[in-house]
Image (cartoon, rainbow, N blue to C red; front, side, top):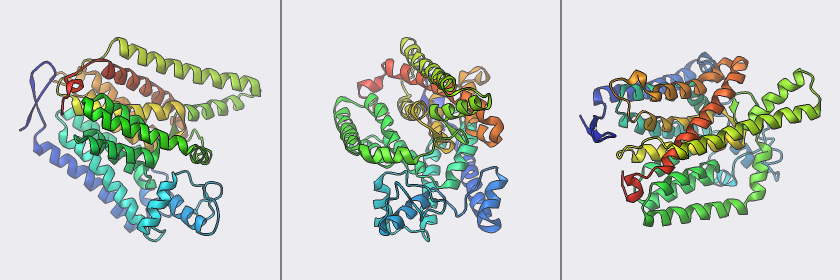
Length: 408
């Protein structure tokens, strides 16, 4: 049994392999059964059984890119009109994805294998967390969230968020600064929003490493700024909806819908929506200030846990505060769990970590309730964003040995 230093100088045992191995087998076997079942009884029928709204043909989100390639070949602009996508959705991915698919020769006939690869990358990233678990409650939370609605949703769609998830995991767990910079830079180029994870890398690197990572972050930001036109096209092509989604913009759409149902005039609706956004942003700013003034304790062995919590926590908070995001992006909450469970001891039932784990699990599953879960789901997502901003601000505020060159 491996031992780890715990906050306060005590030692904590990493869970024995007799618990971690079955957990890994359970995750991989469950997903394997889902895909095997989809091959036997049909894609749509199998995913419907686990309450995931299916789209046919499989891995629907990847077909936006293959359709975009065909549209380009026909002389069209897939960002404006993408007739070769099965659902005629305009392309809302960076151009680099078209380059990748063209270079690899990925077409509608072969895109399924690329979708499977993305699922494997996602599960590999989660498996790293399961293998490092050191409390039964932490292991249970990781299992529950890995097999949640949001996780199954991203697998069914084959969304490229899974590639970004794996790259951010690599970037925040790796030690060589070149690997850190390359992984986070690639994630930012592929999906834009992972740029927020650079903050975690900068907080948890020595001076020399900060130079490499910081220079990469600035270069990525400059490149993204030079592609402002492309980013604007992506934003226009991305739908804002309150269904199966989270974020301030999604909340705006939900409030707007209810305001219309109550027969409010346009000016009143604008006032109600503006008040909603101001309240959410005020709560977020208040959480940051509160966390900075009263930082939560950080154990000296929490280097990688803190990095993951800051990086993935900022990704979630940023996407919540500025956009409308499909619910599958909630998978970025999973790596925030290990830091929350870092101090769970014999009296685990009294730990705030359990409340946090339950909140994350709820937010990742509430969309399975359909229409009935929309209001409570948006409220829970807002609460979760505030909790994470409080924690992330506190971690950033409180010095640890990691600020002094720690290589954990």
